[in-house]
Image (tube, rainbow, N blue to C red; front, side, top):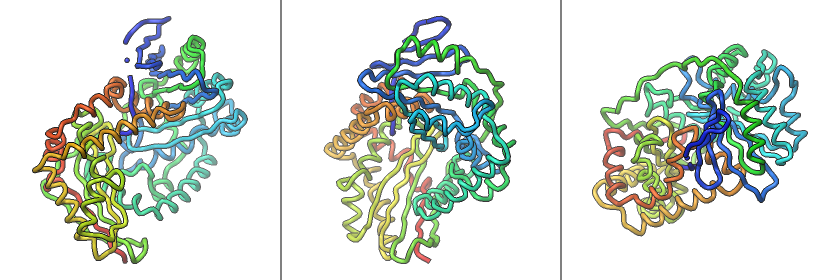
Length: 430
């Protein structure tokens, strides 16, 4: 788990507010949209972040990559603004955006003095973003260049191949990056339709952190972005991913140089709201987070020249995956894969030692603290939880981590990380 948060109830001028712990609160605006507010009184900056529940999870074979295309097309122009980015620059604002499998996010951090003009800009984009063929051509060129850079990243290519093997039906099989072939056929009209399906009030979470005056901010939200309406249309439905009946092990070639092989082994993993998530977080942190992690210590016994090894557990809205990846000399690839599987089987049979559990819990608690450091970090932190699950889960997260038992970790390994559900890939030099 990477982010976290908050909730109670009272009515204020037709707005529902819920205390989110500390100084945070969740606000339901008149149109049903959710806003999350958190004041940092000793800072001069404000972050406004908009999360839309639309990622590659909302795509099909014919629209793969469209959410990223939309993300790069937004905050460019509206009916009344010819250059949104230039206007943000005039406020000294730092604009960031991104898309993953479950959501797209757009965030602006600037002086608190410009909060209301920035909120007006977000309101205008949500209501009246414009798309045309000229903009689509510029975005297509930008994304094609980015794809060329991403092809040089081995882990992007490994992950893309892994997803295609691990998810045969569910749209998590699509990388949010998209493809050059897909971008060539997408039009401005396609992107507009996707935007109008994604940017409906029930699908959006607006987060404001930093410096603001609460009453004035709520009034601005209530009478601004909280009033826009758009007809809700459902995205294409998908079938739940069926379990693999047998392990999938593949060996392929890569073009990243002659002296390195890449090994990745993965299994299904729980969704963010599954109670097993916290045990999986402890497990993944113990396995591959830092030089003192289990994998770094144990795999070097059989492969002393190991370059690196790490573990990854993305906590998506639907059941996702845990993946262990290593880079090593080509001659060691098979022994590294065997060592990874050996450590997993040990954890199926034996309880994780208590000192190892304690180290992982300390690291997770520290990560939670770092996620709350400033206005921008905290906006991402609470926006993730409000978009992906329940804010109350975030408030309970550290307590739940501390309550994880050795038996919980072992049961999680036995449930998810079985040989039958394994997908492994070894990439050898050409």
